[in-house]
Length: 211
Image (tube, rainbow, N blue to C red):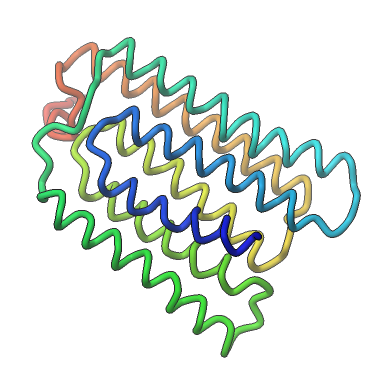
């Protein structure tokens, strides 16, 4: 069962590359949070109620509900609908996303043969998600999409942690979650300021900023 969930998680790369509407991008983020929650629950090996409660809080409450609802409120308040003037046609973006997705299977195969990775498929899909997020940050023009891509990058890192260590110590997990909170809120605050000063909210306006 977890194979299906991990492949679905990797397949969200295609949706991220194809999405032109910002709301669709955020819904994919919520789906990723749900899949991470299911992967964590299915792969539980010890009953530690404190760890389970924290993982439910991190994946199901924060990643699946709180952050997507918060970002939906931000884009609706700023009346942002879709990507403006995409740099590449959708076919090219889908081709690129498909290539990154397939690369995940190659990385998983390599990890299974040569490395001491406990979960090779987790490893391959997490590497694919991180590469896809970096591509999206470079490729997309809207600042809000850079924020969303940062969150997908963090989802990939979360999955990578499960592949190499099965679970992270509680203190490190708490630090990562706080970093995510601070990062998202600071980036959204920055985005709202840019949006109020310069209509459009694309990275082009950053060249106009002065001390």
